Amino acid sequence: MATGTKEKIFTGYQVFIIAILAILQFSVILDFMVLSPLGAILLPTLHITTAQFGWVVSAYAFSAGISGILAAGFADRYDRKKLLLFFYVGFLIGTFLCAIAPDYEFLLVARIVTGIFGGVIGSVGFAIISDLFKFEVRGRVMGFVQMAFAASQILGLPIGLLLANQFGWHAPFWMIGVFGILVGIVIVIYMKPVADHLDIKNDRHPIQHLIKTFSVPDYVKGYLSTILLATGGFMMMPFGSAFSTNNLGLTLEQLPMVYLVVGIFSIATGPIIGRLSDKVGKFKIFAWGSVVACITVAVYTPLGITPVWIVILLSVIMFAGITARMITSGALMSAVPAPQDRGAFMSITSSVQQISGGIASAIAGMIVYQAPNGNLQRYDVLGYVVIGTMIMTIIMMYWIDQHVEEIMQRSPAAPKPVAEAV
Image (cartoon, rainbow, N blue to C red; front, side, top):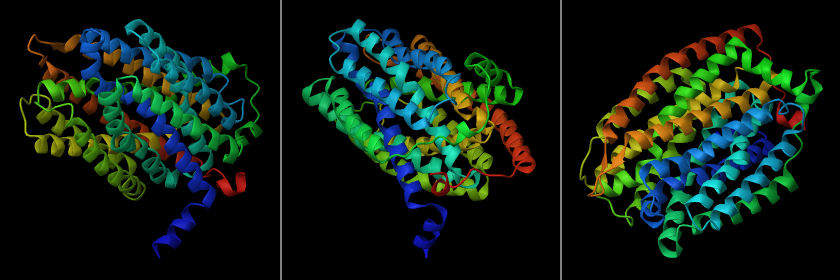
């Protein structure tokens, strides 16, 4: 019975699209997230400070933000498959540059190159989802695509850490690059063009299109919400591994196990949260996820030496809340732009997210500092800042939810099913 229901909701090709976008996101997210657990290795190996490490993380975000804005004016003028491949190739080149980086300065430049291309990939993927799937099932779609975030922990981060511990910190980037080549080949061969948006007449010059999409009041609310979402997400992430090893008392050998267990639970909860958001309401699940995340952040960030099982338990609960926020906010945001503006809106949103995240990472690097004994100081202060942004985001996402409801009432028409579109 369950199988029949799934077949009615998604066609075989739709399942492929969901899978390939999830795998694509997996490689991009892993490339960004792998720096967090590598922080405990990079700080002593490259002889850099926490502030310098914050800039390594921020370099990707800033360059991604700038490229997203530059790409926004052209995002709705090309077949989204071609656009996706163009930026993915550039992203892989940047990843291989990271794999051969000999020092801090080269790594910083390599992260900039990776960010220029990698930061736009997610926005193109979300535009494809908005083009090919009805709003009523986007929670499910986002639930599966956002599993990439968890999969990067359950598969990528533990493997990356093991490779780094065994062969050096360059090894994870070699792994991501080789895997990415295989993913790119699959997209070239099996993914069909996504160009229905080109049928909608749009005579605006790319710069005019960018300015118009930037200035729509309802879109601006989405950008402001994204700023808050990014601030909460980027601040704690870069120093997670350093906090775990220096403050909580975990070893580098224990970190892969922690990420593995948390990843397993995140993969299991992602589709469930997506289904619930479609049935119960996307904003309601977002609000509950935010409350759960706030409580666990408040408990987690002041901790000292802690048994590994407690660290795992708190991390599982915290990431369940974060996953709920990611899935539901993504589904809600996808309904904000008009079809002819989707590519530009998603690209600008991605830019705002990356730039805000870059600023947040840099600020986090200035708030947190490493004491002579190795402990990270003021990590609890960082937690309070994150909680504050999460609370403000609930208010912003309520406005977005009300706007989306108005859109659904005014224009209930949904995108063509992908089976018809292709």
